[in-house]
Image (cartoon, rainbow, N blue to C red; front, top):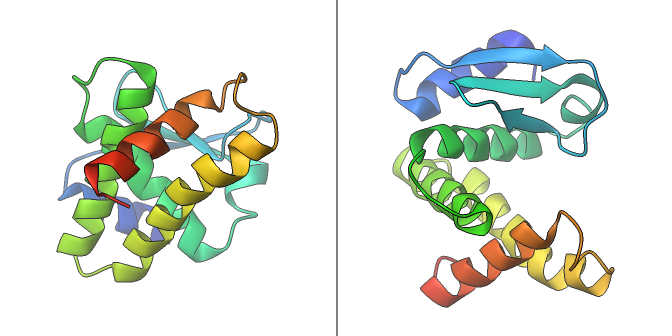
Length: 138
């Protein structure tokens, strides 16, 4: 996706809300992240190396963080953002985006825990995956 397509996708998924998008040249651990305001920062080398479907999953998830600002707890925030993104994708008829996001959630629990990430910064995603499984989201 180019930046025009990114802006169009973000507008569609967010329901027309004004969400700023910035490019972050530094190498972060993530493909994108949200700052305390309404800005999604795309990590240039990482985000744009992903296939288009995965880019959409990442963007929908980050919009989910903006749309669920009051959730407390790191793992609960990740779960809430994922839940919002999956439900919104289904509502907009983006079944491939929703299914791919569910696939990522399943991989977080199955894949990351097996690779020793349990005690690292990825622990939040493993716990969010467990919440999604327990709630029936995945």
